[in-house]
Image (cartoon, rainbow, N blue to C red; front, top):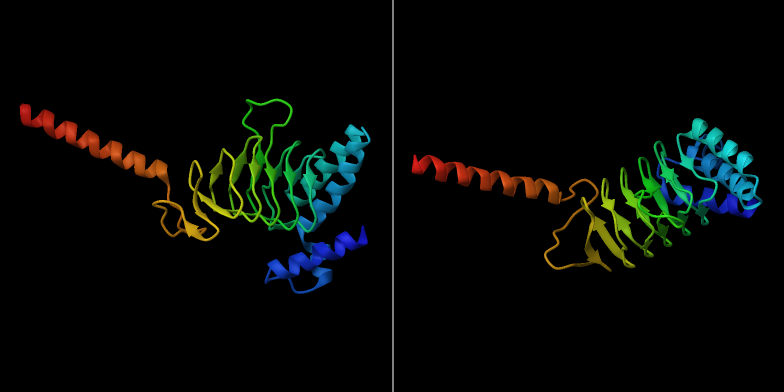
Length: 212
C-alpha cells in the first residue's frame, strides 16, 4: 500500500508542474484522495460488501468531485489532474501510468449489458471534457484530445480528436488527411457538416429566386 502511494505521489510530481511538495499532494490533491478511497471501496466490492463499497465511493464523490464506481479496476500511478466532474463507470478498466483531466467520463451508452464501459490501456492521456463511451479498448500510449467523444476502439500509439472522435495520428505520423491538432484547436466535424448544409440551402434559395 505504501509503495503504491509513493509511486502515485512521484507520478503527480512528474506530471503536474504545480505540485510543490509530497505533503501538498498527499493532503490537498483530490485525485490522490479519490483513488485511495477507491482502493478501499473496490476491496469491499470484491468481497460483496456492496453497500459499504458504494457508501465509501459516494462519500469520496462529495469530498473530491470525482466519482469512481467501486467495481471499476484502476491501475497503478493514475494521475487525475484537478478532477472535478470525472466519472468512471462500474465495468471500466484503467491501466497503469494514465493521466485523466477534469470533466472526463468513462461511461456507457445504455445499449450494452455486462461489460458496459471502456478498457483503457497503459500510459493514456485523456484531456479535459473527453467522453469515452462503450465496452471497447483504448490502446496503450493513446492521446485523446479535449472534448472528444470516443465511441469505438482506438489503436496503440494513436491520437484521437473530434465529435465523434477519429484517429489523426499513429506513432506521430498523420493519418490520411489529418491536420495538425492540439488540445485547444480540435477540428469539429459537426461544425463542418452544418456549414456544408448551410451552403447547400443558400444554393437552393438562390436557384428558387432565379426561377421567380
